[in-house]
Image (cartoon, rainbow, N blue to C red; front, top):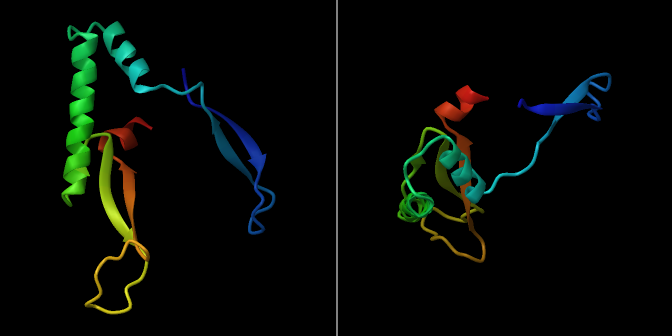
Length: 114
């Protein structure tokens, strides 16, 4: 299969005669579906082992992010940012005025694959 798309007129006034592409996915795959696909490729690990490995992998990434690390993988790069303004250089983080946001960017293999 390939990536499907359709075109719509560009509504931006800077280029009204152009069209923009919108990707039309074939569907959505959940982790369970990914593990099923892994098994169909001849993986020798059990379904339970695959689920456990995926859970541990994700938990480890989340723990590292919570500790203040950036995480770079072949497919996705993760980091955190803080939104909101600080009225002075000595003002601390305040949950009522600031939020922590996830920053997720494609990794090297994902960029290459697409």
